[in-house]
Image (cartoon, rainbow, N blue to C red; front, side):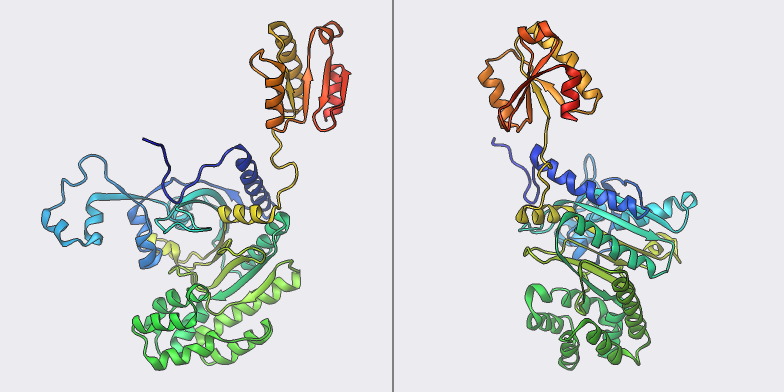
Length: 451
């Protein structure tokens, strides 16, 4: 059988991993710069931890893992015949692959609360899995790079996260737009049109405006039970235009009499004004339709788009005041962001934004002329590695043409030759593979040259 991998997953070779590690290292450096500490959580979580945290659509996209052994032993034929997966799953599956890093983090905080200093600032770089339909920029297995602050209500945390987003993409050379909204604004709008009980239906639908357009969103809202009058009231709100200040003012006027909505606008204004006062390379924007389709956001909502590549969001997040409450720990506010490393990888590939030395492999490859020469080469290689220079020897005494072909294929910077003449002088000949220039030097001179 011809080997294959599941749809929505990818292999990454050495050159690709050099590029991915450049992204991960850049993000990690910025996380450390802003005072975040790293943790890791298991790939598997109990379904009790995962289910009900991402909304109805999110629950459908969870990869469930069948129980070990005879997973059907407690399943009656009648239950199977009913075909209701929501009743079947708890009997045959107790675990699932994590859907994101935020819910496992909330579970971690509750389990380790006595060990943590609040506010607790953590970052996490690990893969997540979603049973989504694979398409460009959307994978079933992908990495997230998360940073969260829990134990603080301060909006300065939102400002810091926006500064961190800006710094990451400034270092990567990607021009971005950061879109902001506030869940309290969305709740206020739902109250304003007389449909507070439909807040989840409204947010799930309007979050698709960019994909399916306003008319199709309105059709979906009608299917979800909103009246035509309520939809007509919603249309102009979603069409608010003008500058950032003008749209904030329009929202303020619109929701001024609604306590929930007014608080959301006040929070938005603080985050926007403080962030802009500090300075930002990115474009900052307000998007009233932004909901991100997740039930646990309660305040600020953040989404990041690349300006020069047509792809989905490459970063996003928000505030989730009550997330740990579902694990029995109330009163703990949190706010976080997640960088989509796989989409960022695609953006950097499309724009060719990697530094020239990103894919640099071994610096020096020693040619193998035989056992005596190889042993002398290994002693020199050990000294080079001690000096921080990557070096290797071709393992077999093959023809020179074959050895040089490998050096060319791998993009080796220098080839080192230790033959009979070099052995007599306790030296080596260094060949610069870019210029073709050859120089006879001692090992110490070679190290000085290469450093």
